Amino acid sequence: MLKKFKPTEMDERIDQLDAVRGFALIGICIANLVSFAGFYVMTHSQRENLPWASMDPGVLFFIDWLVEGKFYSIFSLLFGMGFWLQATRADKSISSFKVFWLRRMGALLLFGVAHMFLIWPGDILMLYSAMGIILLLFIKASSRKLLLWVVLLLSLPWLIQWVAFFTSDHIFWKSLAQLSERLKEQWGFGGRSLFDMQTSNSVFDHILSNFFRAVERPMSYLKSGRPMQVLGQFLLGMWIAREILFNMEGKQTLFYAWGKWMGGVGLFTGLVYASIKGFTGSPWSPDETGILQSLAYHISCTSLALWYIRLIWQNWLYKRWRKIFRWLVPLGRMPLTTYLTQSIIGLCLFYDFGLGWRGFMPFSGLIPITLLIIILQQNFSRWWLSRRTRGPLESLWRLLAYGDLRVKQP
Image: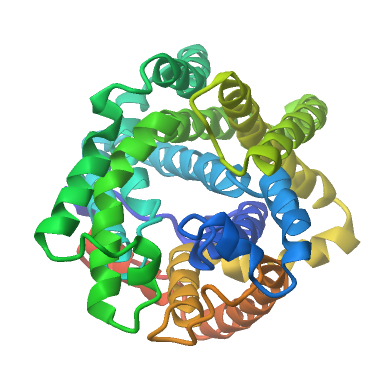
């Protein structure tokens, strides 16, 4: 059955999408390094004692305003576009495509499990694989139905946080955190904080800390509405691919005007979110301010993601900008390899069995570190793709999804 469906060949790729994907990997790297550097497990006093700590609030405000949540949203939109582009090639073999897609998502789940438990509990691949399977239910949905689902799904995170606001003391919201604490105590780690375990030079402590955080993560996802947001962005990406991507001459003026308007909305709501977080020190709190912060965050994520995509697509028409954006294309053609190696680099830089920078590196130092990582990854990607047709982990993913690497190569 699978042999009836052929994978997307390199000559069918759209450089613009690869450039956008490469651009998204820059923002994802910045946002993830904030976590690797220990922001979410350090106390306020620990953050204040970092070198050049006076510069950190400004840098973190910039990241919260323009980066946090916006770049994985770009990836989510691109994921939906990619699903639609592959599905349209399977008009005469839908059943074959469904089997292929389930295998592809199953392989992505394996990558995600390894990433979450061995490297970093902030993994997004497991969620993408779960929401990616649900996409099959929408493969024949009309454009109108897709948009209705987009509106519903992108509204749900805020509604969920309204419920969390009124039921914040209910044991349900604390159940997985309590389970994680019980497991820590039963396994002899009850007196140690996650920061302590993650700054240990023991790889075993690191893996256990990942496990304890992974136990809590599903509730964190539910409370933030992340699954609904990601699925809504997948469907919006499908709609864009169907209605706009290959009809740019007819709809590009409308799309660019729409994207410009979304940019204004995203910049304003992102500013509101970053201002509240800078004042409270928290990405969300179960009070009236937290509800406003949540609304601003969810609106800004999708709005700014669309605006960033619009900027690259529109300026691609100009030779000077196209040359700059083409620099990002190799990164975008090896997204899985680039994403996972960023986590490995973060591990080596910030954990004690590596260089041990966590607790010592100021957050203001993350911007130049990100730029250095991206430059190294771009050069590696360009070198690799000059010798191979796809990245090393992309090849493994292809093997797991298709069952055979001998499918016709470009």
